Length: 328
Length: 292
Image (cartoon, helix red, strand yellow):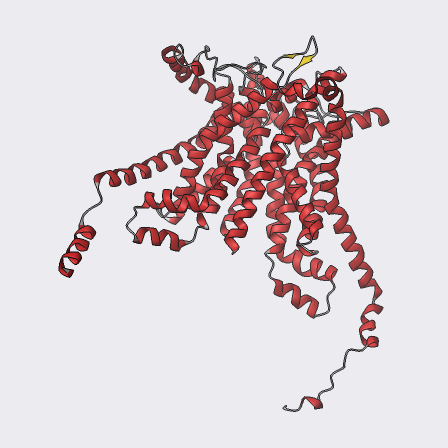
């Protein structure tokens, strides 16, 4: 038992090791499997690169014709082939901004309610689950609901605001028809709520417990702790959640198309019909027949692509930052 | 002297919160609850509306007739066909991408680049995916083979939506398989290939299928990628290479239709689509939340 010399231990020699190499089938399997996996992971990369290249290729006639002035030109006129992206950029960014005004406070509330101990655990799980379920509902069904339920619900409120404040506040200056920038933005806000709530909740849950208990031991109330300790600590993660939600709002197509009013103009009023880049693509891309019209629409794709890319890269960066600081 | 300090501390500790701080605390709690309830209301309203308007019009005929005869059978078949094609394309490639990212040098520079670009692909708006597929499949096949809009093109565009989702969830899941499993397998002489296919994948399979189910649910409800790829058809499609209807595109094309029969069809189709999506979603989401 005590003398290991008695045991025959084969010392690894070159021969011995090469013995494994003899089963070259295993080796070959191993190598081909590796290459197969490598090739598969290249598919997504190839799709993305091809996508960028194709967009640039088709947008080229419009880029050549309008240059960067496309971004600030205010007219979208198909018959005269004068195309400017500003009304569409305004519609896209405007509706997304309104959606954040809805989704950020509600999303944060949901995240706080489901991460603090205000409710019993089972109820918190149910609330979080129901909010997450919103993400499962297809966009086109949200559009249908928006068109037949949400618009009739908002219209009296919009009319009230227009009649009473329309003269003094330019935001309410046009006669509301139901569809418009505000309606689209609010519907978007509901749709991106689960993203905002889920990311913020994850971030709030990893805020160390000693920070909370420390703050409370110093005499702070629950909400003083939340505002001065927990939220500042979670700030960059929550900002990442906001960016992810914004990325979703910018690219959302069907629901926006059905309630935004589909008219390319810039109005100071939030009740006025507008149009966003995804919505004009969904409705007008099939009709476009001249190179310049297709090119201008593809130029819009490029703009949308660049904006969402910037927002998503920012979000990924922030989330990564949080993960790194969480580990250390 | 010491007595009075202790006295004042004791006083501070026993004085109740100032009314203002108390009000702020209670007020914020109420506000947070109120906003949370407002957040849940739309979900309830959507589910209730679709159920209340879709269910009364539900007939067996709708599941057997084509759209022109006021049924949605061809749209249901179209949705299943295209999601099927998308699954065939994206599940193997997605899982393989996940395996590569998690198992082969997960921290190398090239891996980080692939992971980053895959994440970017999940963020590409679905309408952009639709236009891209129109460009590379529909236009290309039009020139080469004399057919254009097709179920295949629709399936490809849905596959591009599903691929990065499956890849990234697979990677996350594989990372959770304990390292000891890998060590034990290679300790017994298993190669990388054997370790992955016989130990790691079977262990992670339930979680991978959750990710795949979520991707399938997402693809079933997508409209924008199908608008310019699968297009739409009132009748049964002859084969996979002709335009084909799907439930989401049916809803979008007919939601504004003045004909009450057609608008009933839209509501019932929405109910059915929502049913499919939730049936696929619920078990998957319940499984993941229990895992936590």
